[in-house]
Length: 347
Image 1 (cartoon, rainbow, N blue to C red):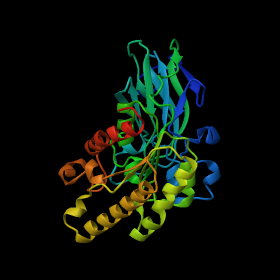
Image 2 (cartoon, rainbow, N blue to C red):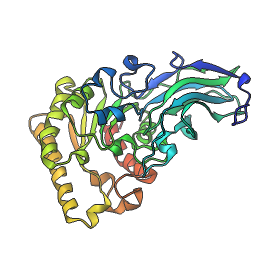
Image 3 (cartoon, rainbow, N blue to C red):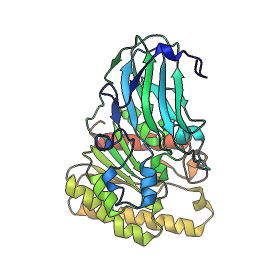
């Protein structure tokens, strides 16, 4: 028996990848398979090493299927377990199971290397839509999924919109600091609207470089959401990159909605004059870039004020004064969700 208490002989293992499992949120999975990377292998030599180290973390990646299984387990392999000081292990390295849109259980590594982790056993047999949310802040290799020997596996329910929404940005975009992989704001929003999404947030490294703009523009998306101001070390860098980033997307995707988000609140703005000034200057750059596109006739771009997502009134929605906790992400999703829905024609 495994330490979780079920007989492995009663489990049928299906190696991953397999056509029975739909992989969402990883735009280049067909190219990278079986690696759960967020950027294509061919870009490894073209992006900064710091970006690539984050790109191998499958934040936003999901494994989806429907099944009537009474037990569910995975075989996975983890390398050295790094720990971000402001994020719990389950949020950083865990895999979260949702069934029919409801949270069931996460599993997470206690050691490095290959291991078997159990989500549940002995559940009533009933067909359910299953989604495994992959780790927000840690690389993992998925080797196999385990079901009871009589389980049926079917395709998952379709999304309301065929193409995904792409999010590009910072550590907040990547999911820091959700308590588990299903409570990033994109995951919450995705379930609420029944839309697919791709997470291209890079903790501390979402700086809007041209090579990332071209990568984002490759994706045939239903909409693009940009939220990368805070990672630019200077206002001048953001000003040099933000407009061209939008131009690159628009050249490849002339009709796709683009949603530009100014910085959300951070508690340092309450006591630091310099922080408030930087906040205002970053926001002004984004407003000007969006306004310029609109003035030029672009009707599919909109600017969303970050303070409408998380404001000084939401200070309890942060872990460390900068990164949202689950409460903060839920608030962010509740405001951004209708905006995305309107952009997609789902209102």
